Amino acid sequence: MNHLVARSLMKRVITGGNYSRYMSSAAKVALVIRPPFDEAMIGVRGQGVGMLLGGWRKMMSTASEPSSTVAMPEKEKENSGVVAEKKVEKGEVMVSSYWGISRSKITREDGTEWPWNCFMPWETYRADLSIDLHKHHVPTTFLDKIAYRTVKLLRIPTDIFFQRRYGCRAMMLETVAAVPGMVGGMLLHLRSLRKFEQSGGWIKALLEEAENERMHLMTMVELVRPKWYERLLVLTVQGVFFNAFFVLYLLSPKLAHRVVGYLEEEAIHSYTEYLKDIDSGKIENVPAPAIAIDYWRLPKDATLKDVITVIRADEAHHRDVNHFASDIHLQGKELREAPAPVGYH
Image (cartoon, rainbow, N blue to C red):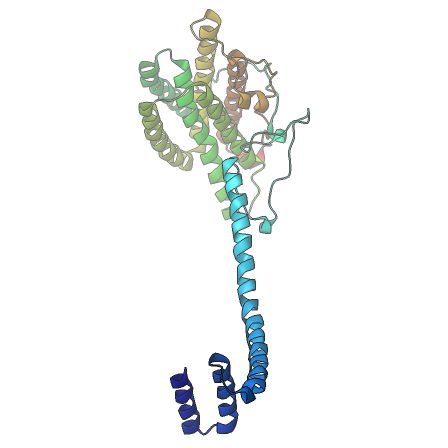
């Protein structure tokens, strides 16, 4: 300690500081660290201790403030970490409330909590089962015949691969059926932006169709667990069909909608055969998935037969919409010139 004090004094003298004041302070420090044996120095030591303790208290109080401000956020972080862990355990997602976009509590009509995030109660509906399932557009023009023959040709490999496994067939077809509405809606959306014109509601109508077909798929996945090779087939078929339909819609929307109309006619036929196998007992009439009960507002005791019935009705509506759209183009008009069937499932 004496060595340190001596070095400090020499440094102070060289730099031209107040030697006497510094000597006094150094002496006080030395007195505290190394108490003298002279009784005359006791008072000086007590005074030095008091001043030094006062300085230490001031230093400690100022030094403790930053540490306390740092400690608080760390504590908050720990608390937030505990909350986050609890949220994860419950299967919830921890999000920041800073943006103020957290969803309000949504309930069913009976007051129970709404369990789905993929669709809301106001998007549900009761299927119109009174629709005519036997309508058929007789191909008259050259493009109509091309569309009809193309769909019939595509059905051959489907029948060979799936045979009467209508659950797997429906799952595969729904992954394809949800593509045309999305492609058509997207291209009409871009056209509307490009030409600064309204779409007549057709963007919304086609996107509604795509969303409805996607809900068909979500329902079928609950009923039929696809195998790995079926998933691989879905990737291949969807990739090819999306690009092919995209190009077709660019070249001829009239032909594209006609193809979809005939595809929906085939879907009606497939679901009718599905119902026949359920009625005959070849396929078990299991309880309806919860997602289907809420989406179509089915009774709580609904079965697979009820689900296939409402899906078939949806396909019949899609058939009408697409044949109607093709007829509009056949007359040399644009879709926006005719009212779009928004909400027509």
